[in-house]
Amino acid sequence: MDDVPAVTLDDIRAARELQDGVVVETPLEESRWLSGRVGARVFLKCENLQRTGSFKVRGAVARVSRLSAEERARGVVAASAGNHAQGVTLAASHLGIKATVFMPEGAPIPKEKATRGYGADVRFVGHTVDEALVAAREYADETGACMIHPFDHPDIVAGQGTCGLEILEQCPEVGTVVVPLGGGGLLAGIAIAVKSIRPQARVIGVQAERAAAYPASLAAGAPTALTAMSTMADGIAVGCPGGIPFAAIQRYVDEVRTVSEESMSTALLMVLERAKLVVEPAGAVGVAALLDDPDAFRGPGPTAVVLSGGNIDPLLLMGVIRHGMAAAGRYLSFRVRISDRPGALAQLLVLLADTGANVLDVVHERTSARLHLDEVEVALQVETRGAEHRRRVLDRLHGAGYPVHVE
Image (cartoon, rainbow, N blue to C red):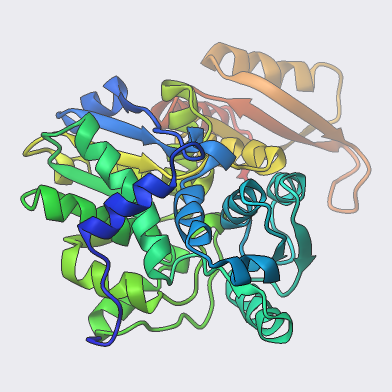
């Protein structure tokens, strides 16, 4: 890929000057609970606290600021599930430029509303960012608007790389930097910055395993499109790497890992509970990688994990919390049939109380063709203290003769 434009450390430093007054320096907070889990110091780079709620504004400001007066007059167009959309629209509004954004159907409502709030004309097309990108390119061809790609442009990569400069300034001795990976702009920019200044540091990218285009692409030596993907991490659900970030990732990144939906939801819940930070699933993949394999991040030097964004739909957050609790063994949902006689339900609830399980919800069903005349079905949701406690609760139910169906 020799014909792909290369991004340099000087480009990243120049991009930082363009961000002054719009992009904020986000905190790098030490995480005691993650440090204890890994057995080495772990820091969280809180890009969820960035303006617009994600790192995307960094690249958007760098790209839009470099447009000519003629390009600015024609307006800009972008395609995004929400974070890039907000970054582009904020950058455009800051410079008085009209912005049109194409979003996939089903994009998170808070991201859509925030994008409209910054002044964008939002249009829904397709079901993936890749489909929205096609529509955005067509719009650019038809109207002359300047296409602001979410990751495949040197200015975007350089802008995202300013996050890496901040990490190095906030933790000069950093040994490993862990970065969420979708199209590759953030990972590429951070990797260029980190490896140019501190070449001995490791840089690791993390993808959702159900939307992981990079492992196969790196193996093939060229960007390779996925045939299908399905993940709650909409912020990194990109079907094909960009050529510019791919070339940088090939050169500078030490490793790319993948994490499951269960690991992401557990990580999101843990970040919320222990770090008191709200992140979206895409923003939690780095923490998920640490929780999956803490030994891999045990030195030399501290580990910095980028929390790339915090723009999560409250309804999704509710579902992810439940999913994360279940994955961590702290949430048990089951159905059980009991006899239709006075005191039978109370007896079941007393047993659960004796185990220390906290009953969250009970649904009592009498009318069903599945049930015998003398039976009722009870659906319960209970909170447990962990996987071992969950197992003990189920053992007690089975030992008492209850036919339990876990959901």
